[in-house]
Image (spheres, rainbow, N blue to C red):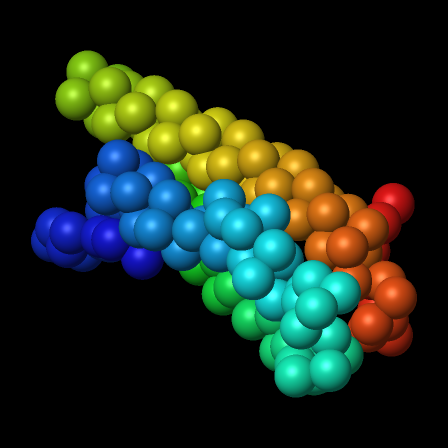
Length: 147
């Protein structure tokens, strides 16, 4: 999680966080290429074990999804806490313009992180679906989420 610290709170730099998520999503972006290199053509089927390779790829995919989801939720919870603190300060009678500005900024960051969680769900479904279409004959994971 890309974050810069400020006194008494943890601040999230959303653009840095989004850049790090983009780097973590490379396996999902290159899933077709990875599947093409994982599954052998007819002439190479005897030399390569596609079941083992599909299983390894699936584990890499699942690991990446889990890491990104944890990172997003950790960031989301941090921003939720910050928004709650700012709302409490506002509700206690402080009508400071900088407080209201910070609250709106944090609420905007919260909305962006929530939408990032939705994007992650779409990417995950697409990747698992493409994986299943290509590797279903070689390896069938116990828990595929194709819904």
